[in-house]
Image (cartoon, rainbow, N blue to C red; front, side):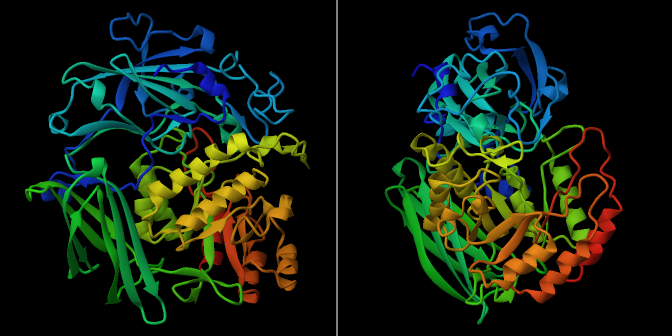
Length: 595
């Protein structure tokens, strides 16, 4: 297939040859690798890459991906990392507006008289291009793999990928992993992986988050091998009956390439005792464990995040081990009762939450595991029990850390189109996307699909959030429907419905507002509304702020249907600040400690 630069202009094209999103489980060759958390099926490509920056598509080094071509003028760049923070482009922070406003005229494709806006980004003089090249030899652990894929965990904004001069694929959605099959073009030595990253595509209309605007490969890149029989997708449904503290388990497994074989499942309790074991046939690429009643189970919640371990051993038809997987399992139940109270495990849920951008004062959004662990500890030390992943999916390890720490998650899609419907502070949705435009539907439903499929097995996730500040229309309603069609174990959230109330019955299980004053929250609750209420953003704690928190906390005692909220935000987004806790954190710890 020949890659086309015109894909940048077309909202209907957002993935080409990209492997479908799947569960984020990790697979290992042996028990020893599993115990050491070190899989020979994985090979990191992080480090120094060759690099060339171009101001626009016309000046990019065409043909740089060809192995025989000279790559004169290339320098080096660290991966993962942002282009701007390594000296190749200027930093830019924007709230509502799009980066080009005031400089170039653009409108989203198909919003004004059906105009497809051809050339809007493919010919854009402001659409800078980052060209990356990395040579690698195939690691020993991958040479006997049945297939090898490359995983980019996060790249802003739109990428074209080649291996050894062969076009591999195209992807958008900056904050979810993109995987491509490299197998047809791999060689043992001196492989050339090339990536062309464009600052803008139609995805830019969907990623108008209030934050620093960066570009580049800012999360990990790695090669992943798979054995002859490989567990491609794992769907674990753990159920809890809060009244009896009993649980059940159902597991659906999808294997690559219509495989045949056997899978052994072993469930172990948090104390290390074996609870149950099952052996299942793999037929036509599937193995299914129908719902199994387990009796009394330890319950997962913030106070005591008890986790079971589900070990999955995959064997071929000859009984030879192919891979081993371990999956954390938590038993918990979230629901809305007849009185419109949100309950977790039969008890009222109170959210003492924060909005957390991925942020480091020196690396921007290219954060480390150490950053994540420090954030978890700060939350636990200060009575913070919940995180809204504003306004995109986080790195995959974050969800695992929250499972183990008992941090409740509102898992948000990578969606914000603030500038398409709010202009100069006024609601003016004449060219809002995604809206109800059919040409934009598949792209945003795909973002919901990716968020769900990658993260579906994490007990910490209580809410799926459809995105942020994108108005409301048929396409966001379709996102909400996708979650309800696939998952009855969580609630959906979206704040933008009050701006377009016609969608109240089709979008969001919760009534959600930003910065609604305490008196207005009380007024909402006094009128016997259908949905529970949550402040998805409140207190606005950037800089020297966060006063008057007690008035919100008082509402928790007065209104059982009020969940609490998520403070904006956890970390001041600034370069070269030192993350020292501010005095406001003392107030947060005091008030959040009341419930």
